[in-house]
Amino acid sequence: MTTSDPTHIFDAAIALAPAADGHYTGHTHPAYANMVGPFGGVIGAALLNAIVQHPQRLGDPLSLTVHFAAPIADGGFSVQARAVRTNRSTQHWYVELIQDDGVAAFATAVTAVRRDTWHALDAVFPAALPADSIAPAPAIPRAAWTACYEMRFVDGIPGAPGSESASSESLLWIRDQPARPLDLLSLSAICDAFFPRIFVRRPQWVPIGTVALTTYFHADAAQLAAQGHAPLLGRARALNFRKGFFDQTAEIWSTAGELLATTHQVVYFKE
Amino acid sequence: MTTSDPTHIFDAAIALAPAADGHYTGHTHPAYANMVGPFGGVIGAALLNAIVQHPQRLGDPLSLTVHFAAPIADGGFSVQARAVRTNRSTQHWYVELIQDDGVAAFATAVTAVRRDTWHALDAVFPAALPADSIAPAPAIPRAAWTACYEMRFVDGIPGAPGSESASSESLLWIRDQPARPLDLLSLSAICDAFFPRIFVRRPQWVPIGTVALTTYFHADAAQLAAQGHAPLLGRARALNFRKGFFDQTAEIWSTAGELLATTHQVVYFKE
Image (cartoon, rainbow over all chains, first blue to last red; front, top):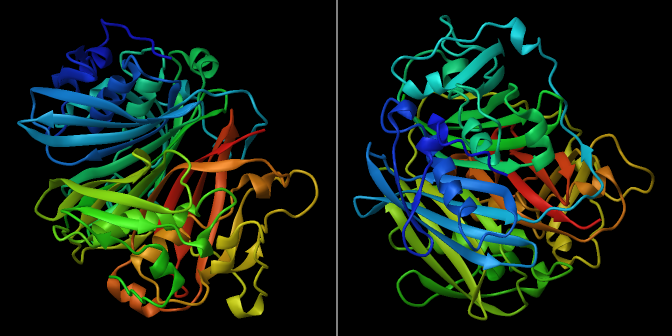
């Protein structure tokens, strides 16, 4: 399920050193710095990594909810993972990221042993020009982490000058930069790599921050292996901006048109 | 934010008796029985109620994630709520439901003090015939809880005989039965009252169970008060059925066309 490459910055950023039972230590990575503190997708992946590495883990990640509870400072942190309940084929997890004796982030997750069943896809693979026909968007200098993803926008590039847009939707090809074979850890981080929808709907700068993020993983090992380094197609949109918060949802598709993950988050914004 | 009516079965079903600091005791209610154990929406509402009642609570519910970790037996349970982190205007929560010394369900939540800001609605209010022009669907005898909701299906009534449907989408008017003024507690339960999408897409009986459920609350007190007893418009669909699990999403709209909540869940199914 993981394709750890110790030479890749993503693997360095989510690396955890095991301490006692279910306890780990980690460190923020400058390559994934955001405007304030680290990029949340990498923090969520580090919390998921504590589960993936846990000796009691049963099955592969099915769902992940990450709470960004407080600002995370650049530097070291500790992680504690606990299997709250273990069933025959599913397991429920609670994980905390601790910094300066306070919980700065925490996550819940489900891991599951999955079996072949009837299957059906209800969502529709978005029509998109091929990735190699679109130039990658430049990274955003004040958000270092954006240089860690290659993003090729089919539609809905954020920050385009002008008045309010009628839609917050973006469609883009995305992959790790430098390229890295996809696994559920990198997929979990990519689920948080869609720019805040408020910057598409209303391109004007305001402070924002993801409050909580939930991802459902649909991909199995064969799909991840087939995807490899190739760009994923992501579609993100917001539903409602109101009273200081908005929610946004996204779908992540394989190049071959399989739905690999769906993700939802609630985001704070300051007017 | 709450409109507690001690004579209503919903309020009886989510009632918690405070014990020590952040500890409560509760009891399943036969009116909300499901085929096995209680209806999950009422369990989630009871966990949220522990936060709503908590003396340290800051603000109103913004997000709620409930993990259904193990079967819940009919009978008593205890609930423990803990504010993991309190910020200036947001607070992050962890709540456990304990039965027979094990964690049978747990939840995380964010409460927030909300302020008027710029607002915009990206989702589209679904076109629907008025509620009073549609007959309520009969309750399902083997799922007692279905008698606690008045559901009027505009489209996508589950269990219609026939072969696989191309879409898992349902559109319906829904409210508590007997009618009860809407609050965030009853809204949280209604978010879990959409029948499992597999029964719309493929009307054949299989065991299912919600594994985890996340809801984002958009409604404020004025919108809840304006809604009162009137039917809500709900739209639910699945995105992907695969390897024993599917995800489903729903929007809950006020009669006046305001988006009150969005919700997502991952559901186990046995082939």
